Image 1 (cartoon, rainbow, N blue to C red):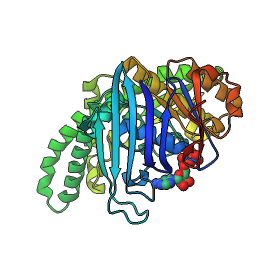
Image 2 (cartoon, rainbow, N blue to C red):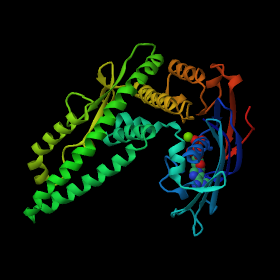
Image 3 (spheres, rainbow, N blue to C red):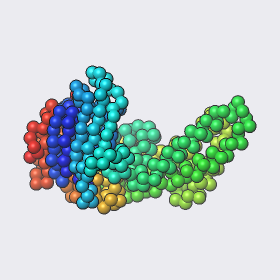
Length: 383
Ligand SMILES: Nc1ncnc2c1ncn2[C@@H]1O[C@H](COP(=O)(O)OP(=O)(O)O)[C@@H](O)[C@H]1O
Ligand SMILES: [Mg+2]
C-alpha cells in the first residue's frame, strides 16, 4: 500500500503544500518546530480520518483559518483511492478550538471515518509510544487491542460489548446495597461478562503468541542476537495459557464467583480482561522496570515492526510505516539495522530527521526522496 501524493491546505502550519511521495523511503529534514511531525500527522489523518495526537479535529486547522483540506491519493492492492478530507470550524474565534465539522470523500463519494479505518492501517512510531513500555497496563492493553482490531475488525465489537456489560454489572453492584433483592440479577451479567471476556482473552493470548514470533526475529536483528524480547500475557484469570475457549470460560466463571464478595464490597468488577496486562521482557527481565531508554525504544520499534509484518500477512502488502523522531533516539548501530530492515522490504516509509548527515551513511539515495521542511513550507520538491 502506498500514499502517492498529498496536498495540505491550511493544515497546521502548512498554508498550501503538495508532496509527491516516493514508493520506498521519504525523508523529512528540518529544524525543530518547522512542520516535520505535522506532515507525518497529515498522512496518518488522510488514512485514518483523524489525528493520533490532536484532541480535537479543529486543532489541525491553521490558527488563522476556518477550514483545512487534506487531499491525497492512495493505492492499495492496485486500486486507487482519491481521499479528500475537509475540516471546518466556521465560528472559530482566535485559536480557541471548537468541534470541527468533518467531511470525508473517497473517489468523490461521501464516506464515514470507519470506511477509511477499515481499509487503511498505517503503522506509526512516535516518541510517545515509549509509554507502551513505561506506562500503565491500560496503555499496553490499548496498543494490543488496536493491533487485534486491525487484524480482526470484529474484535472491536467484542470490546465494545464487553465494556457495556462491565458497565451494567458495575451499576448493578452499586445499587445492590440499597436493594438487596437485585443481587439475583448478577448471574445474568456474570454469564455475559464471562462469555465475551473469554473471547477477548483468547484473542489477546493468540495475538501475543503470533507477535512473539515476529518480535523475536526483528529484535534479534536490531540487537545483533544479544537480546531476546518476549511478550507474556499477565492475566488475573489465567495462570496457564490454554487456547481453549471453554476452559478459559470455566476459570473466569470460578474467579468471578470467588471475587463476588469483594466486588459487592468495592462495588466494582475486580476480575476480568479489563484488568489484564502483559510483560515486555528482555532477556527475561521486565523492560518497563529494568530496561535502559535505548532498550525500551528498540523494543517498541520491534513491537511496531511486528505489527507491520502481521498486517502485511493479512493484506498481502505492507502498510505505510511512519517514523517520527526515531533516528535521534537510537545509537548508530541500531539506526543502521533499522534502516537495513526498512530497505530490505517492499515498504513505503516516512521518516523525520533533524539533519541529513544522519542518513547518508545508509546508502539509500536510489530509493528515497528527501523533503526539506522549513516554517510550514517545502523547500524543494523532493531530491
Ligand atoms: N493549528 C496550527 N496552526 C498553525 N500552526 C500550527 C498549528 N499547530 C501547530 N502549529 C505549528 O507547527 C509547529 C510544529 O510543527 P511540528 O511539525 O510539530 O514540528 P517539527 O518539525 O519539530 O516536527 C509549531 O511550532 C506550531 O507553531
Ligand atoms: Mg517533530
